Every structure is written in C-alpha cells, then in structure tokens.
Amino acid sequence: MRNLIGWLNPQNASVERIDLKKKRFEPAHPVYYKGPGGRPIRLLLHARANLLAIWRKKHYETGIGVMWIFRRQVVVVNAPEAIKYVVATRHENFERKSPQMRRALEHLIGDGLFISDGDTWKQRRPLVSDIVHKNRVPVFGGIMTGTTEELVERWNRLGDGASVNMLHEMAGLTAEIIARSVFGNDLGADGANEVTEGFTSYQSLVDSVNLGYFLGLDEGMPLLRTPSMKHAIKRIHRVIDKVVEDHLAGHGDNRSMLDLLIRRQKRNPELKLDVVALRNEAATIFMAGHETTAATLTWIWYLLSRAHWVETAVHEEIANVCGDRVPSVDDVPALEWCRAVVEEALRLYPPVPILARQAKTADRIGTHDVKAASLILIVPWLLHRTEELFPDAHSFRPERFMNGKRPLPYSYIPFASGPRLCPGLQFGLTEAILCLAVIAQKFRVRVQEGHKVEAVFQLTLRPKGGMPVTLHRR
Ligand code: HEM
Image (cartoon, rainbow, N blue to C red; front, side, top):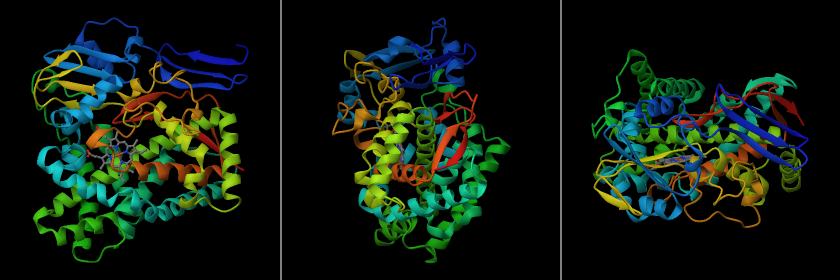
C-alpha cells in the first residue's frame, strides 16, 4: 500500500493506519495483547493502566470466556444471544452493577440510578426516564444549539488556526448543555464550572480496579476518602444542594429536569425524594449525560480530521439541509451523514466500553456455569470490533449505518440494552448530531501535527492527554 502511513509504538503499543487511495482509515486502537498470561496480578496491574489493552486477538471473536482472578470468577460475554440473556432475559439476576462501579461512585451519587438496583432502581427508573424522555428532547434542542453557537462565537474570537484541547472544549460544551437542561439557568457559569471541575478531579482519584472484590469480598472495599476526594465531593454537593433547595422553595427554572422531578415528588409524596435523593438523581444525570457525549464528540473530531472524504460528505450534507442557517433540532432527521458519523464513532469508541455486572445468584450463560457474586463483563469495546459482526471492524465506515442498514440485535450496544438501556439515548444522540452540525458548518478541525492519539479507559473511554487540535474557519 503506497499511501499507507502506519506506526506501532512498542511503548504504548497503539496502532493507526490510513490508506488515502482506498479511503480506508483505521483509527487509533491498542494492539492485541501478546504478553505472558497466567499471573492474575500482572493482568490486574495491566488492567489498571488501561483496561482496553489487556485483550488478546481471540477476545475479539464471538464467544464466552471464563477465568478466575484470585478468588473471583470473571465471565466475559461477547456473543449477541448471550448478551440478550444477561441484560434482558435474566435482567433480574444481572441488574446489579459491579462492586467496582458501585464503590467508585457511591460517595458521589449515593443511591443515584446509575448504581442503584432492586426496589430503589425500580421506583426511580420510570421517574428519570420520564424527565429525559425522547418527547422532551425537542424542548432541550434549543439549549443544545444555543450553547454550541456560543462556543462557535468564542472560537471565532480566538482567530483562525487557534489551538485548543478538544476534549476540554467538548467537556465544557456538554457540561453547560446538561447543566442548563437539569438545573435551568440557576447554576450559572461559575456553578457549572465548579461542578465540572469537581467531577474531573473526583474521576482522577478513583481506581479502576477494586482489589478487595477479587480477593473475596463480595461487596468490594469502600473507597478511601482522601482529603482531595472529600474536597471534590464537597464542591459538587454544595452547588447542587443550593440549587435543589431553591427549586424546593419554588424559585427554580420551571422548564428544567430538576423542577419536573420536584413537581413529581409534590404530586406523589410517597416517592420520598428528599434533598439528598434529588441531589443524587440530578448529579447522576449530570454525570451520565455530559462525559459520554463529550468523549463521543472528541472522537468525532479526530475521525473527521483524518478521514477527509467523510468530512466533505458531512459538509455537503449540512449545506444541502440547512443552507446558511444554523442547524436546528428539526433538521436532525435529514442529517443522515451526521447521524451515521455519530453512530460509527460510538461503535469504535463506546464511551462506556465495559458493562460490568455482579450475578445475584448462580446461573448458566450458554454452556457456562456462573457462580453467585461472579463478575460478568459485557465489553462493547470488543463486541463492536468483532469481525464476524462488523466486517473490517477496526476501520471507520459510517456507511455501515446508512440507507436503513442496522447492526444485528444485541451486537451494537453503546447505550447498553434491556431494561437498563440508557434513558438519555435520544438526548445524547440528538445532542451529538446537533453539536457536530453547528460546529462543522463553521469550522474544520485538525488534530495537531505530531500528536499521537491513544484510547484509554478512565471511567469513560477517552483520548489520553485529551485531543490537541487547531481550528480553521470555513
Ligand atoms: C453519547 C451519549 C451517551 C452514551 C454513550 C450513554 C451510555 C450509557 C450506558 C452504556 C449506560 C448503561 C451503563 C451500564 O449499564 O453499566 C447508561 C446509563 C445511563 N445513562 Fe447514558 N449515555 C449517554 C448519554 C446520556 C444522557 C445525555 C443522559 C441524561 C440526559 C444519560 C443518562 C443515563 C442514566 C441516568 C443512566 C442509568 C440508567 C439505569 O441504570 O437505569 N445518558 N448510559
């Protein structure tokens, strides 16, 4: 291949390939793990550094793998039928999040929906689903485009060719969108900043492996609350509590998600949503709804920056559908390329690359016996890159999602599946499509020369060191 640029860096072992002639782009991903196996401690240390880099070639095939890490049975489920069994058929037995996930987030979001199960989850799920439901997405569409236009204006002031870190920019954008949607205009720029910084710092302090669980503690080990962690939690809780109290006192923005939740509580006092419960759900939606979309958008700018042929198609589509006016929520159904780019980015870089569950009781997945309290891993990162399900799986081809083509059921699960399906699916998709369209109409984004893109797992799947880019006015 004459136009092939490829590299392999043995230090961080990530690979990226582009063939301009064939218009084939294989964006950055860790190479298959080839190191020695056998020692659980080695695997855990490796997993701690980057959970995406521990997988061998065989793991990128459909099947079910069972292993033991110290005293814990770990079952990796990578076949659509078996995934259906875990997330839908036997949801009741596998609804519980892993102790790692619960312990990592409990100080921050308490019994918030993301990590709750049993009766709490059953009671709260319809409430949260309702307030972020797809019928309400058009209401939030104005916030999405308005906030993105503000960003475009700010970038215009920076001048042509300005350098920014795209991960940081997208995190700021989606935090502002979700903050305005959840809290109305009451949080203010300073409050939103305080909460976002609090989350970022909390995230950097959380370990991705709970050793106690692997050593035999079914509930895992509680996270040590260091002074910096306490500080991060306090920053977030202080700001959110103030807004919740204002809303409870009737001084809140009545179009916000929080206000809807409070009105529900007033109508149905048996729900017992006190200040802490309201804070937990508001913080959950904020957390679940901003990181994920920010990571998706950041990957999109990287993909378009390299695959110029796709970028051109996106630009032409926006011009055809919107002309010179700013894209709006009504344009979304016509933006087929934009949607396909978003869906393909979510396939290659699912922001939640691992769905981890804890079996409540012993069970049988396929032909494999599963013990009570085992760790069940469904890994969208692997599933989405399984050749049998997605031919030429590592390459960026938005066309997979065009002209009515859809992946097989349970083979494409960036938003999970079954009763725990992400309630923000429509919100997140619409937001990503609109942010992409509003920005791409005005700017071309280029990853900075010489920057090596690497995918790492840190609660979400994100580019290591962010994404340094330059912005070019169109
Ligand atoms: C591209 C954007 C998004 C992606 C890829 C995404 C993905 C996911 C995934 C995979 C889960 C399930 C996690 C698991 O089972 O371990 C989830 C749960 C959740 N997401 Fe999203 N999400 C996105 C955007 C949003 C938005 C915008 C909101 C809110 C407005 C949201 C709210 C939630 C909530 C509350 C849960 C917990 C649901 C439950 O456990 O019942 N998400 N999301």
